[in-house]
Image 1: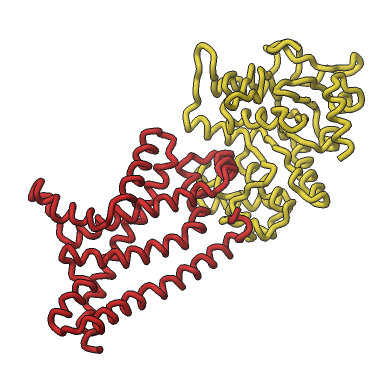
Image 2 (image 1 turned 45 degrees about the vertical axis):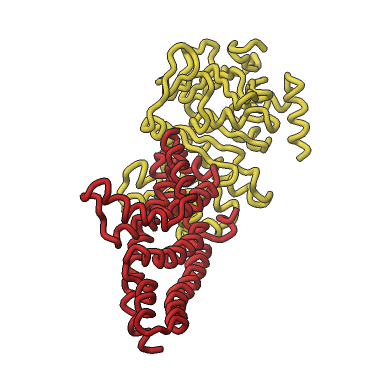
Length: 220
Length: 281
């Protein structure tokens, strides 16, 4: 058992690397899309909504294959490393889901808060940054942790385009040790060890945010 | 009452003319003036050709039943609602003009400036829950007026002291009573040094015992000469603080004049039934 753990451990580093970069990208892209969905420029709003519709409907694996195998056929300059294909693919796919949630969180901030921000001369951008987004963060906190957990699981799909993260390492190991059950159990164990504490952390963050803002005032 | 005509002003012969409400519109220097204001929401008409102005130092109470258009009128004054047609002027300069042959939409910067000049206090206070009382008052100072953090804090503390809440500067809104929250909201608006303050039913959402502390602050502002327009149900405010009372119904101004006169002897049956209802609550 311990030999399996030692063999798989380096894969954990890669998994976490993938997760970290992808999450950062998902977050930025989702916030941009969520704000874009509420844009007063009609074209922007429509474009963002189309994006969400499309990328929620396409399987992650299909996107990864497209990026990894498809792009280089268009031009060698577009040949990205497996790692970057994975990161971009995961980000682009997950953002479509998270954007909807963030957009909902933004909409949950009452219209009157926008009025109050406007009444002290704040521009729309300032209102977003100083008034609305900080309040939207509370209902967005738990779903963000969920996104993190989804991304960790998505990274295992990257194994199919040669990224040597946990799942691929497990597959390779089985070819050597012929112990699929034990190996896959350890693999599951790795994922559990990473995701379960994240779930707890998420609940703590949510509770902390609610205490600071006064739950009743925000959860309308 | 014919639309667009100069709204009749009720005056007793023995009294001097109400300041700023001279017959000829040209002689009046309104700080804030909206003309021929029409506001439609889809099929519904909230404002049907309203002319309303307020001169410096005036304190106007706008009354009317719900759905009368009084809140829409107020929100048009700081452009939280954009009129379907009409012209809004501040200190004699046109801020915006809608409908008509030559419409003029204010730029984002002009809108922001206008709202600094014309502050608003909301029925449900609308403090920013993620900021302390001090933070709420500082936000506009820093981001709209460009004060440094230090200057903003100083000025914000002054405003909080003015409304009697300096010791609660570090409290978050949910730790404050309704009356305290509303006073912070007033401080937040005041910090912007507005020329006109708009109040949208400032005490309606308050428990009765908390109303007085807020009215006291508003009275204090009145004593300092603040120009104000308040949509209110509080007849006491209209009678004691306001210099003019405006009755709105179905998107039109039905009558206006000194509060004492109107309350004592309303000309319009609309006013009459409104007053009866307000007195009973």
